[in-house]
Image 1 (cartoon, helix red, strand yellow):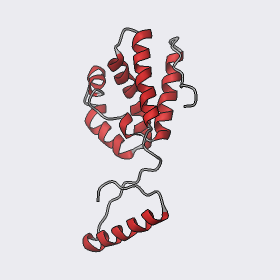
Image 2 (image 1 turned 30 degrees about the vertical axis):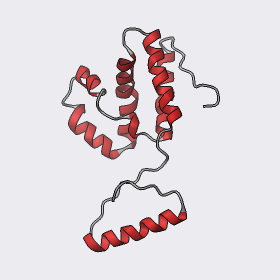
Image 3 (image 1 turned 135 degrees about the vertical axis):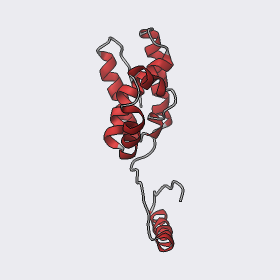
Image 4 (image 1 turned 60 degrees about the vertical axis):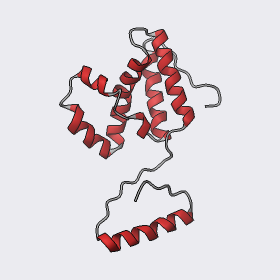
Length: 145
């Protein structure tokens, strides 16, 4: 079964039927359930605007460098705390085996924010704001966002 979305009573009933059929056939199922909606395009756009802003106001890094920094310092801790599968992967593959510089470089390729729900990405953006205000950079949400 590929990823499914349950957003109505009808879709919930359809999934129950599919699960019963699969269980009858295999006698074993493992499910990973993710609640909440995927991140919004608006949130994604805001994060990229902020990476550009950081590169202008703190020019020691370019936008990609700030994106990697933010993913490592704000995204990874959030996902490790809230996503068991992500935590297991990160801890086994990256946490103890890579240097700090290698971890930053890995953030160019490792999806972190793309796996976040809207609630998680809101926490990520707020963590960015709280961190960078201490460095004199005001990251602000556009009106109405």
